[in-house]
Image 1 (cartoon, one colour):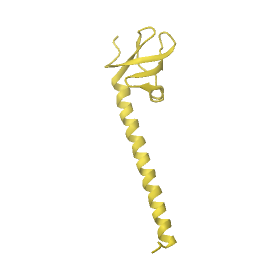
Image 2 (cartoon, rainbow, N blue to C red):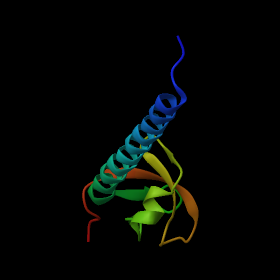
Image 3 (cartoon, rainbow, N blue to C red):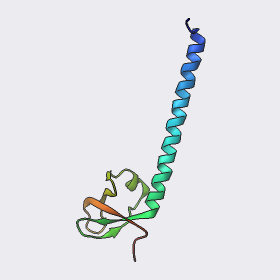
Image 4 (cartoon, one colour):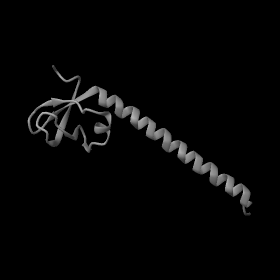
Length: 92
């Protein structure tokens, strides 16, 4: 038994729309989770031991990461180094 072409086309459209919705929701959830991480952590530079927070959310979201470390530009030594995540605000 074959499926009529109009029904096959509708199924194709429904599958594409469902995939787009799933991808869209996944991206939104990932950004929300990352924003919470961005607000919760600051970082310690491995080069100069300076404590800092990424200046922008975009800098944080596009940084390379490996576990609890991110490759960020330290504002104190001006080097792009791996920085360890530390929970809490940057001490004054």
